[in-house]
Length: 261
Image 1 (cartoon, rainbow, N blue to C red):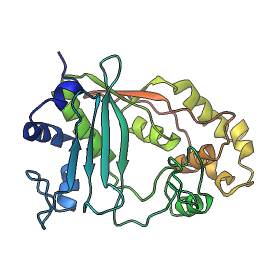
Image 2: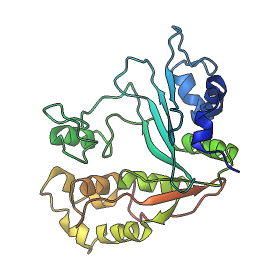
Image 3: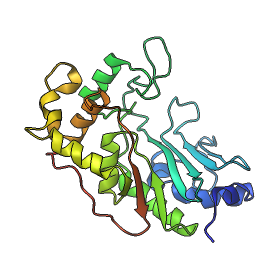
Image 4: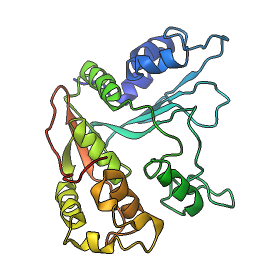
């Protein structure tokens, strides 16, 4: 039988940390001079936290270049679904040396929940102009292939043939497609979005320059489309599709026919 998150969380601490460490790309440890055995940096300060509450259906990994850093360089939340499947519930990857864009708080310091509850428009504009996608507070580390390789190894070890996630944004869904994920739910919507962003489509017509996020050229790129969707260009709010990856198999799905990321 496959291991569950509950069983992992009940492991002895040191054994559990070794077991979960396969989820951390080795490049991250090397980049921040973190010892893979002790998870300490060159100053002897521990930089990786494993949050594994017993009798709870999730665990988290939080890696920071320095524990005092505002943002994690890598944060991963894995949970058990009600059906016994494992899901990647949340993931963050940040380059701590990259400029920060405060899209996660508004002008009054209130949490925007990455722009889903309220928005910080000046910071979003700055982030977009710097080449970031919605929900990014810093540039990433260009690590998707490494992350998926780690996930494949882990989920294979625990005996799960499939694992699941729900992308927070349109651009994330496209990146996961390129990484080999397929759709449980939402592929038809993604195909429709692609069609309607192309010349002659409803969404293409809405890229009228009425806001900075609706530039007429945004239909061409994944990021441009994602910012327009974040700005409400769809007829309804963005609903995250449900995606899955078969361990060791690339799904070969591609719903984007634009010109670049």
